[in-house]
Length: 408
Image (tube, rainbow, N blue to C red; front, side, top):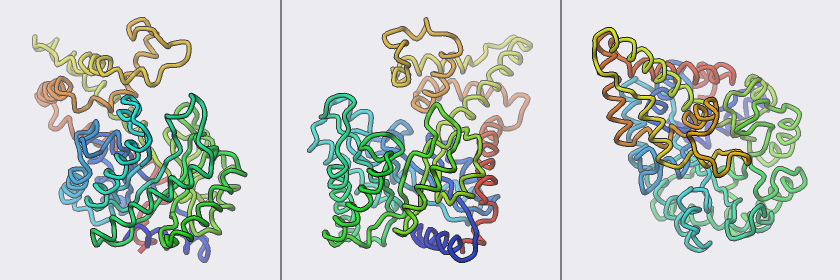
């Protein structure tokens, strides 16, 4: 399997010399069904697949998926065997930085402790065989609300984390990994073009000074018009930022690509990669909601007790309190039950990824599948295939079908 760095170098070469534009897809593995679907798509579309796992999803404590980095990689490899996948699969860390794990913010960890925790997680990712580490120290919870660390501070913390990863990689005798820097958020002022350029200039200077020139990032993340609530990719902004990044030997990467209206513009404007996550949670939610409605009809006909899966799922989201993370200003302090039905559904759908592995949800899902299995062969396969079709939408838009052949 080619190393991710080699794949990206080949991608750059194709663009520069053959005019071939391909954008790599990074799927956020926020559930077992999403991970399985992505491996299934990689196999049948003969395309490389990146898996961008946040510290909330996958970490030393299991994250909300229940996976440590080593367990996550083992699950990815298990699905590869199941589907006969020979395409490159690249486990990656997404948003590796201080206070980007919700628990660390909730516990109000001081800078030194938050940094130490991230470094331990970087080591765990390297030990598990991750191909890429996103270094993202653009949040500082010790500053007043709304205030971001300065660009020089972000650079120093980025270099510190990369230096740790490189030292650990050498200690473990591991081959080179790829790095990703920057953020799609406003944190650190990196969205501003001048600050974006300053960040890259200072980063190169400090990496050179520290003898880390070989760890220059392969991806630089930037705001290209999309976020959790906007879905239009800005080709003009992407082209401006690509013109800045390309001479450095890196590629531009977009996050929040979920439900984007114009995905074909990613490859056309030279985007190197794009992350998609919440959309696949929503697709999994929708498929289960459909099965839940079928279960209700089936059980009414057969005088059986339905699984009540969606009711159990919503209650688990409410009990987790994670839904409060997404409240609008005018909703703050209000109980979940008094919110509008459409908002409750959106919050349950968005927050479902945090509770897929909650024991009541797992038990209700087993009951749902058992009921549906009375008339359908494999309800789980239906859910996985629903997610797979959504992933394939991006594979086609990004020019990734049979991309293994082109990138070999």
